[in-house]
Every structure is written in C-alpha cells, then in structure tokens.
Length: 418
Image (cartoon, rainbow, N blue to C red):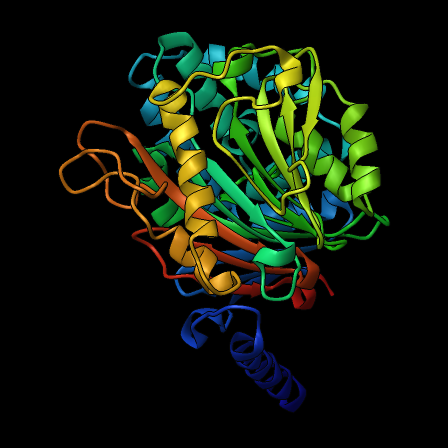
C-alpha cells in the first residue's frame, strides 16, 4: 500500500513539474490523472473530466481491456451515434449498416481484427456494433455521400526552425465536424494509449469510446499525424474493398520508426478515400495529399511553416484549387493560420499555438474572421470545432482541448508510453 501511495504521489508531482517546465503551458489541475478502474494491464483514468485509456499487451488482450473498461460507453455511443441518428430516423436500415460493418471487418489487418474481437468478447456487444462504433466518422462520411451536405472540415498548421523557440516542430489542429460530434464528446471523448507487446510502436490518439484508428495520433518515435477531408479535390469516393484510410495510417504509426520509413509505407499504400494528412516529426512537417488513385507529398519549399485546410495544393496534381468560400473557406483558413503564426515578434511556443486556436473563424455578426476555430456555433452552419490538438513531437508532448468540455489538458506521452 505504501509503495502504491508513493507511486501515485510521484506521478502527480512529476506531472505538475512537467506542466511548469514543459515547452509552453498547461494548468496543474488539468494534468493530474485519477485512476477510475483497471482490467488486467489496462487502466482507465480521468483527466479533468476526459477519459484516458491506457492499454498494454497483445492486440486481443488490449481489446479485452478496452471492452471491459469502456463497454458501457461504447454501447451508449452506438445508441446515440448509430441507432438514434441513423436507424431510427430511417436514414439507414440496420441491415445496411451491418453489411457495411461486415465489409469493413473483411478489410481490417489482423491488429484491428484482434482489437475488435477482444472488445466484443469483453463487452458482450455484437461485433457489428463494435465495428460501427469504431468507425462513426466513416459512417458519417457515408451518410454525407448518400444524402449530401458539407464534406469539408478541419485545419492544421506546423512551424519549426526560426519560428519556434527551440527550433523544433510545433503543430496545431482543429477537428471540425457536425455539432452532434461535439455533443457526443461531452460523454464519450477518450484519449487512448496503445502499448503493444509484439514489438510494434506505442501509439496514442484521440477519439470516442470504441475508436481503434485515429485522425490525431503520435507514436513513441515522435511521429505525429492528423487527417483532413479532401473530398473537394479528389471526390467523395469510398472503396469497400480497401482498408479504411485511418486504419492504414495508424498501422504505419505502429510500424514506422522515423519519417523515412513513414514515407516509404505511405507510398506503398492505396487508400480507401481522399484525405490530406499532416506528418510531423521533431524537425519538420509535410502533407500527404491522398487521392484514391495516387498520393503526393507536399513539403514547405524551404520555409519552416506549412498549413492545410481541405484542398490539394500541390500543383503537380493539375487540380484547380478554388478560392474561398470553396471547400468551406479552405484557402482562407490556411492563410489565417499562416498569418497568425507569422505575425508574432517572439518565437512561437505551445502557448502561442493554443492562442492561435482561440481565434474565431466567425465574427459575432456571422461574417468570417481572422481565425479558424468554431468554438461558438454559428446558427447558419453545422460545422463546429469538436477538439483541438497542439503537439511538440520531439518531446512527445501533447495538449488537447474539447471545447465546452475541458480546458487544455497536458499529456506527457513519454511517461505513458513507458
């Protein structure tokens, strides 16, 4: 008991010291983890109202831990995001969605199959429900393909070199999606750490209860990724005979030890739908513009700053990039981010990246502003900022904020990975 108390005390003290000493800023009251429950090697914590799941072992063991610790939340998410939103409203039949789940499962690599099997076994949920809960973003994209609506959201930025106080890379990103996803985040948002025992890299990411593939993730080798939709440039085409795009990328994070390996694995992959993917390491960042038929890597052309919205910008595509308001004001959001980062006399640090994400995209009168974040919903637009992420890949540090749910939460992933 004494050892447990001393270990807990050390963890809390170490977290508070890191909050003060870390690049940037965080609040000590958001950083101290509280253990909620355990299952085998898996542990569920609370960080200022947000759940954090830390899983260790084989992928089947991690799935069982996941299902035991968050089974009721996964069931609740399914009822809210699938049953009530799509089936009871008549937008999809249960047979349609179960068929979609079956097609997803067939394309999953063994890692994700084992996670799904483990979650289903430990939670008692039907495998189809677990698959759909794990892929609610894909289901939403499928609904937009079937019924129409905006397919473009999300913005991101990376700076390094002369723009940062230590010359290391800093990233900032908004995950923008329909307002229902922000509502779901209040109850079902979760930060997940996978620590495989098979030699794969450890990977941490952000999602909802049931998530096994991420659109925001950092591995223990210091490679960070975030994904934006690119349907405006490459069409909303979804292949059901290919592994889902984010699953492909997360498997690359499990495998890649540096940016060169990451690049090789990206170039060896055919993706199931179009996306724009930032990949950042300690010294630089680039974007992969992904179409279902090809992939282009866009670097910053020697300038240590780069940003993206939802249109391809590599001229080699020969695809016309339209000015705002096309693609949900994509070009305007990109230039807003660049301007906010450049218009600073001192070097950028993590705190400044957070302040960039404070700047609103909509002014009080509903006109577009000089920022990119939709922290306050515009009555004329369903897109809102669901979560925000700032990372410092060199030190494996991440800051996460869920608007209307939490302030910035600091996560020292060195501690959690090891």
